[in-house]
Length: 145
Image (cartoon, rainbow, N blue to C red; front, side, top):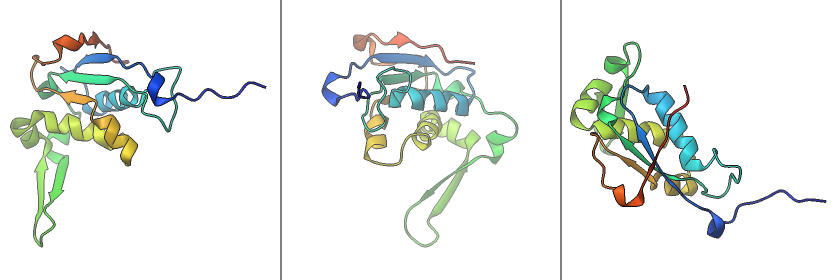
């Protein structure tokens, strides 16, 4: 009887992938990036092992949302003090920190545990077309759809 293959952390081969976010829809981009970080695109995917690749996202400031989300979508942060809840809409967030919207969207689609935090460390987001990972020779990755 043949047993199910389980990837071991030592035998995982990681690649570097480059994704251009210009004109892409935020949620569709984030869901595919989350799958790449988890390693779901590989035949050796194992749920309890971080088998994903490193992902570099460029042009994060040119990502789009549909409908009225630019004004209606809110991002919250809480200081922990009474009256310390702050909210900012998508349009304002894109002006001030364009990388944050993409980062938070991907973060929300990863597991909310130690494994998810380890996967998130392999994500690099840049607002413009420049990135500092040329030495890793990232492969250009075309998104589905």
